Length: 455
Image (tube, rainbow, N blue to C red; front, side, top):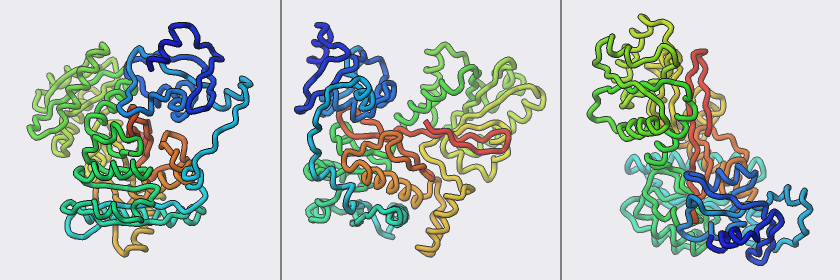
């Protein structure tokens, strides 16, 4: 980055300047000054580039620990089509290594390293997840994509090292796992040494993501998820009057979200109301706006307090029929439709979530039916259906590998796979691995429709 900045200050960089990177000549389009909170994905999208094109033009991005810093400069290359339009000098490309190019032309070698047993809940959930992977491999086979699957049972109380010493493990192109944080250090080193891509499917602590470019992490930490939701909330509800309702739930884990949302509203100059489920009808009503649409946020995700909140809002809208109210909820609300569906429709509810199980759509019904046919039982009744999660993960990554080999980054638009339950969009974390940043708003409309909005 120092070299790039020096060239910029000397005025050497112009629209047709050239830089030698790894023996290849690249044409520069311009320099970009990094603004606060900008990301590599966002900058690439702004200039119509792929993430790989942007990284190739800025080799520092591949260094361990790299992160975008405000007021530094990065090179913006021409996109490939733009280079052709600008009649850039024809450059003979260096052939890609055979290990990269041939993944698309042969059977993909997939490893699964998860607790695959019937001893406890972890094992049973991962068995169902693994079955979803197998269902995806079956679907891909019919479309001409061949996958060789090797699965290892890696429970919590066993060392993963013997598994990693096996030749079949070293020959994998892609490994899905682990489920336990204590197995991450060995796996991270292993995939680096053997040039294997690693997909971490669920919620574990994986600090190696910050420095290992071979890792994909599907799970979003609560902090990252809340920050993403708050960012999108402020954009989606411009012109609304937010109302926070204290639900007197001493067990709630939502305080961090509501606290940071309020701070963000204050920094944006957005006024909001605060009330309590125990407030009198008069005081409760004072927190709402009759001039603006209101968006209501509770400080708990529990169903019992949500039921009381709906009762309070029903009373309020009876006495003030012109009041416009939307509610903003939490991921667990998607499991409450049996009891609250009509109120979800009535109050135009939005629920932020990283995934959404919709039992009414035909693709879900077909997968559930196929699961029953293949395994002679129903999927477990959980907030997410683990077999569908495994199906989505396998379809996304295996299709990506079939198209791009080990150059696959999981960036939006690369695969063309429409997820059944778990959308995936990855963004590189500095010079490290790739983290899923997909966010859904599940919207229950007053017209009795359920729509999903993906960000």
